[in-house]
Every structure is written in structure tokens, then in C-alpha cells.
Length: 132
Image (cartoon, rainbow, N blue to C red; front, side, top):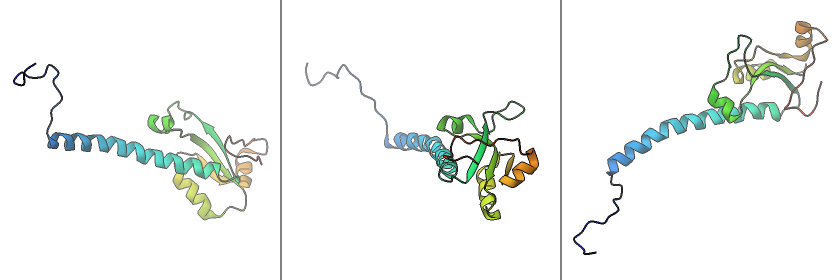
């Protein structure tokens, strides 16, 4: 092959501007996924690290629609229906769980849960090592 002939294999050619635009367009969705993953990690840490918390979880709402997005479910998020904290929990602690889990129907103390549902309601959490 002589030096004047073009190579039989053509390589991709693009400008630096095209590369920067492509990277910016890719960074936006990846940043969103990272932000959602951070939220899921924080929510699961709140449930796993605190043995004083119990939850009842559901995959869908009573009307059949998933409460958390498909992306967050894919990352590992759950839809808690009830979040129950031991009786000596402060109101600030309850507010922290309410803000982290806005889709939860109830965030309350154990005694309030028994008033709401009666003593026969069993509270089970797949994340807590202990049960009430």
C-alpha cells in the first residue's frame, strides 16, 4: 500500500465541540440517576441503621399505582405504607422520617399505631433485626 492511498478502515472523526456537547447531554441523565441513588441510599440507611424503626411496605398503592418511580424501584427503593418508631421518639425524629418518606401513609409512634389499628396489627420490618 502506498502512502497516498487512504486507509481502508475509516475512523470516527468529530470535533472537540461535538465531544463537549455529547458529554454535557450524557451528564444530565447520569446526574439525575446519581441524585436518585443518593436519596435511596439515605432512605434505606434510615431504616436499616435504626433498630427502633419498623415498617410495613407495599409494592403498589391501594389504587394499584406504584408510588415510587420505576428508576428508584430499580435502584432498590421501597414504598413504605406505615413507619412505626418506638414510643420515646421525639417529634423531630418523626418529622425527619416524614420528610424522607413523603409517600408513607403513616409515620407514628408504636402506641399511636396500636390506637389506629388496634392491638392485633402486627408490625414486621424486613430491615430491622428486632421486632416489637
